[in-house]
Length: 193
Image 1 (cartoon, rainbow, N blue to C red):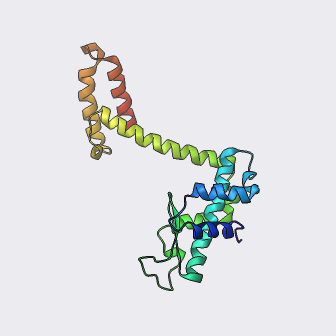
Image 2: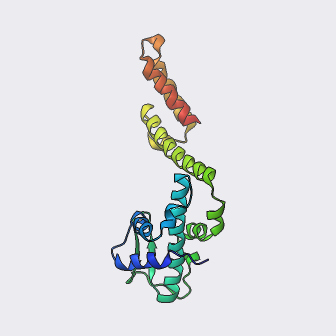
Image 3: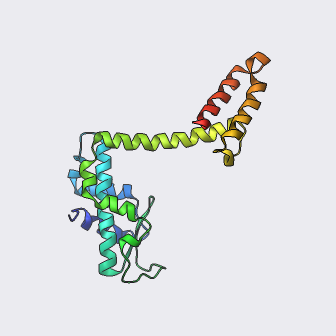
């Protein structure tokens, strides 16, 4: 299905030779397409659908611009731009499937992904994303608490050894700080699980 946002997005890309952020594309499209503001009752689902429609249009454009005009549409998380003089030569055999972001493109070009993603799925995706960020931050903090280098993150024996060493000295029965002792245990649990 041809995305109705394509002409407006292409016009924006042609007038912003330095590139444009997805947020700015959305702001501009909302002025011309009021339907973008009524895609869902849930705010997170609405944002997902707006994002999906823009990305779908961009990936459709990426393919058609190369096939029809040999222009490269660079789609990055911070900037989207149309490259007229791309430094890499492409052969006529170049297709979207050859690009590094083929899986991402396939996702956004599949209208079933738009249809099947409901409020609960968006919540699950957001929770998964934030949980991943928190886990990374928690693990970094736990390494710091246990005075371990990042390269020992997967070395359970080294973690256990370091925890026992620090906990032995920090144990409240030995005059250690209770809060520090608890933080050591929390760090140990975080890294072991």
